Length: 167
Image (cartoon, rainbow, N blue to C red; front, side, top):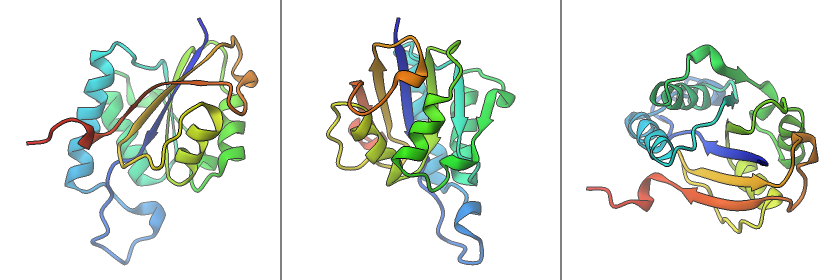
């Protein structure tokens, strides 16, 4: 069994209050609605990760908590990783390369443009943009997270809220 990495972009955030910093921006109603729905799709496919790693920005952490609830993971299972916020590809790679090898499937909650670039860097994905609350699942033929690098992964699934017919 190799490693599987699930990249998840935070849900739609609320731009209503211009007085708060980018870091503090909360999710809006759609973001709060999409997160459990997307988490449910992963649960239905039996692809729930063992570890959740999130940017500490409010919108990412809230998304991670919403997913954790659907996946029945305690909220203290979410590992906050400061460097994910505003991270580029190399920063994200460092985070992933340092993951504990005892976990075979890990979810990483982060931000664009870094997350989309990271998916394309790691795998054969050719994704123009991961929409809010979009999920990208990649598989790697390695036993160790440290072995993940450029184009070593295989894209298994790319999903996002609008990919299913919304009523």
